Length: 331
Ligand code: FAD
Image 1 (cartoon, rainbow, N blue to C red):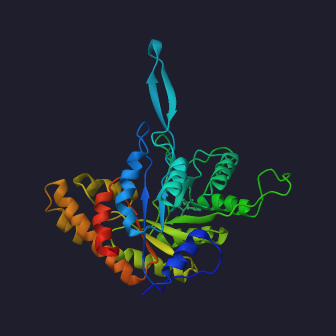
Image 2 (image 1 turned 60 degrees about the vertical axis):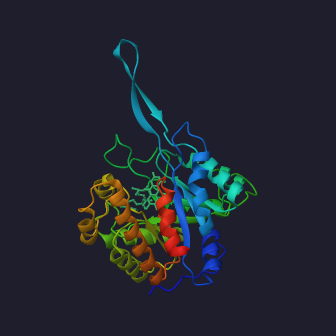
């Protein structure tokens, strides 16, 4: 069994985990997406309200990069326009903290940001009292074959971690700033129990993860997975490679017929045969939801048994299913 990981250093989320884990209870947390542009923040609250009774340790809010579309203009010209379909990550985090008094964690990515812009975003967060971030590289945009960093931007999540650590030490890009106020960010990073899709193998990916921790990240949140054995092996490998920080498993209940092909393709993960055997019998979304919910409950119970400090649920706008699972596991 994975021992609950305790750290004495003063790091916000790790501290939350520490304090709450004194009871040796696995914590509950979840991720939400900003609403599509034009929708109100009420849609966010409607997703959060049903989950509040399970006392979430923190709520993550994803970040969505701009997408490029072509608009027809006069004389047949096409104009390339950048649009953000889901803006509002920082505002939502501030609103969540204000309304629910729960730690809200914005995802911060390298893609699309120069270091200067990243620094300004971090300053905004610091002024808002948001002291936790999940530092990510981001995926290539649809028109790119490979991830391309902005000129003067961070290339890997590790570089972003280094920039945040610098700011925590009062080192701003402009070295001439005198008596600079240090920030106090607690930094999470992504881990992949089935390896990141660009990585040559799992060990190589774990070594890259170790570099992010060595750069100053405080904990790991994993990509979603459906096979607990893959997660247990990943944790074991991380520990062997010297990664000692908390590793928080990410769980997504499969809940529609579309998910059966979409999730493996989009997240580069496998669905275990024992699960697909059951999904093959499903005729409707409701059938899938039942199988997916039961699977996620079983996964969660095993992860609690394993000693996971927290289980992080990907709601993807569907808090009803996560509520059913939380009721069984944390109720
Ligand atoms: P990195 O840690 O930088 O790793 C990327 C790849 O580069 C890996 O294959 C790694 O092994 C390799 N690598 C690392 N360092 C080096 C090096 N020095 N040389 C060569 N190779 C190297 N994306 C979003 O756009 N918005 C979100 O809100 C978001 N939330 C996420 C939340 C979680 C929990 C997870 C797991 C992913 C999330 N993502 C999000 C997706 C993420 O941005 C992508 O998976 C991205 O492709 C990799 O991000 P990373 O931070 O893991 O990158």
